[in-house]
Length: 146
Ligand SMILES: [Zn+2]
Image (cartoon, rainbow, N blue to C red):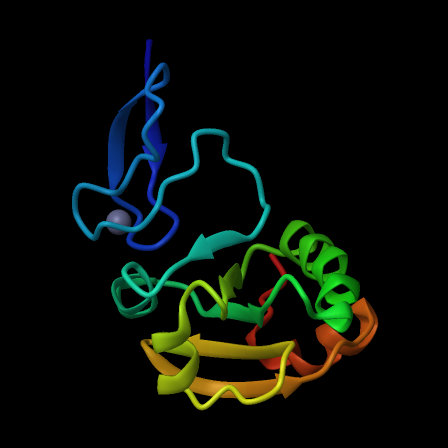
């Protein structure tokens, strides 16, 4: 069985073998593809981050987090709700323990830190956990209502 999966970053259509156990990547930009088009956050790594941020047609909100960080666990469901509540901003996560290069490149010293990237550039940074309404208010300029 194969399915056509639209790349969340560049919009390219990829044919993906659904029975594969490997994580599929976009043939055009190497961004991770999601077999089910769910709105859950995309997991980025040191290896995939740059390409994904640069090629994305939409702004990307990246949650810099770590497994030992209690406030990160508070912000995780907020981000999941945010990802589902709108389609203007792609929500992604980067585990700073597994991926220290990107975290240090963007000088993320405290977590959780949320950084919004537009056309590969940082345009907004939010430090600390916050409720959904506050997150939406901070990101309002980038949320398009259809
Ligand atoms: Zn792509």
